[in-house]
Amino acid sequence: MNSSIKQFCQSFTIPCGFTDEESQVYTNAAMTDILEMTAESSQVLDVFHAHEEVMRDKKLPLSLLSTLPGGDKPSPQPWRFDFLPRFDEKNVYQGAFFMPSPSCFYRCLNISKVSHLIPLI
Image (cartoon, rainbow, N blue to C red):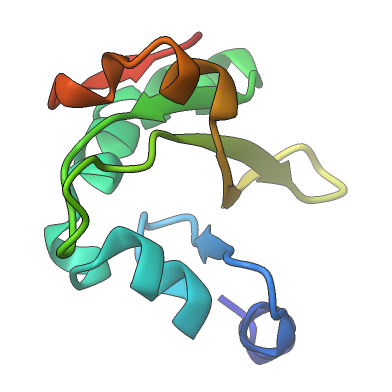
């Protein structure tokens, strides 16, 4: 991945990350805090990698709803993770940009007690 994209990601104050064409993950500090673990051991990223080939081949975004527990909070905050594929000018897959957003809707439904990931393809 080129260094300008890495610098771009690191400069964001909102949580975000990128993957490169070889599925190597790069996140900023805010994203690492949300994952509450290293990017290499994140279950969210494991599910992304399992669906990455479909996203790449069909050129479609992927969204995941995560209700996995994390940190010292008694009830985890559900997060929606959106993965957007990136392609170069020759339409060759370059990786994905991803960012989370809090899922207030699912928190209100109180499904946050269930610990799992739901692909929203």
